[in-house]
Length: 220
Ligand code: GAR
Image (cartoon, rainbow, N blue to C red; front, side, top):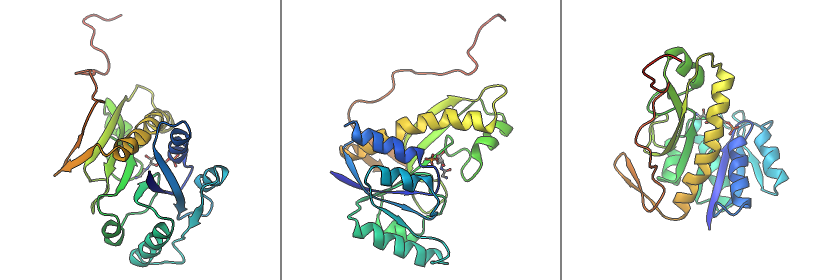
């Protein structure tokens, strides 16, 4: 069974979705530790409520990226972690981390990458006027939100959307695709060829187009 280390900085709703999928028998994996850079992260409480061990590594204790990541890797290894799942972890992963878990670190990001990498991306999507946004599960590489893409989900951006409304619509999809991506990995179905991620077996969508807003020839 795939042993996961989940890294959180905040609320941890994606962590909760992964826990729920495991407990429902939909995801064949075990979270052996939840690690946070923020002692106040609600995700730590979610972990404890489900009997999952937690670790906190604060920035203060480890001022450089290298020392921070060395300590985090050491702790993840001590919990037998094989695969690292970033779930709202607001730190950039260094080479130390990447070398310790090569192509074994995944992230979820609340936009349709490569559009809108970085922070505050839901507001940026609204301001840009895009018709669609969504979320992306991807492998982590040395860039920012730039690694090979495993799954994406699309949501419409609606007239009158606020950052909160769009974030909530995207988050709902995050909670569906993140456990699914981990399950694909757990089943050994994921292969990476350059930038392209191939997923063996069933699961491809049947719909060949989505239009937003829907096209009608006449008003009303
Ligand atoms: C999620 O929307 C996730 O995609 C985003 O932070 C939120 C965490 O929510 N991650 C990033 O922006 C990473 N660049 P959660 O703590 O409730 O799972």
